[in-house]
Image (cartoon, rainbow, N blue to C red; front, side, top):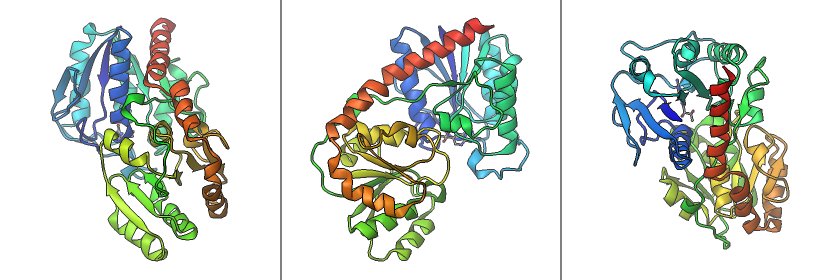
Length: 354
Ligand code: HBI
């Protein structure tokens, strides 16, 4: 198939502003190309993606959906890169069999039936705003097979969504992550340091277990981290910075466990399969995508949401987990190849579903 990728309009590929979508887009471009498909990418100017042709599109970056209040109406910024991306795709559409949209935005959804080329959407987050919920649900009902998501929990966050929505999971390139049997005893936390990620809970666990906590990720809200630390003065916490996947693989692999304390519904949780790929067991609340990935008692533990006592007890029991089973689990369930094949199946169905 000849596939156009419409990237996220919040920032150029490689800037990190696009978060998990940047890693997902990169993995699918490589995975689908390996399956013999041709890929062409449309993304904001300044985008970098090794080995692929990227149409660099100018225009105003879109406001991230998580920064928009739930009740706010859809806004398309003036001279928006989002409009320019889709104007270019409209002009080029005869070149493609299918357009795969990665943007969590209304405009591409509206275009599902307005282009001659088949347009499909890989939705990257759970329910965030009423306007986006409405358009995602409506598109899922009007266009069979047009929508795919990463986890059941993410799909369930949209009430009234069509049961045809495809759940495709995610995947990582195993070779980028080195297995590590040894542990240096620290607890790990990976993700943007912001309230919805629940960092304050990880800090509280570091204090109650006396174990050091290492944090990797964009320090989006430094004042919030400061507040968490002052609430738990005896916790040993270090912010290790925002690093590349390779660097994360090396450093995270040393940890005794990864703590996932999200307060919002994580659509999937790429950090969970990255940690498991390094042999690091994961302790997560029973909330969102991570709770669908962790196999309780085998690749980590699942505890009741926000239950700090259970989380601390899970940390004390973590030595029971076989670290090599963590990596083997990712190899057989969440490899980049298996993810690309699931997406390929979805695209074929979308093309033939009519
Ligand atoms: N917000 N409006 C908008 N569009 C996106 O594509 C988008 C976003 N916020 C975050 C985001 N994409 C990605 O960082 C997440 O999907 C991972």
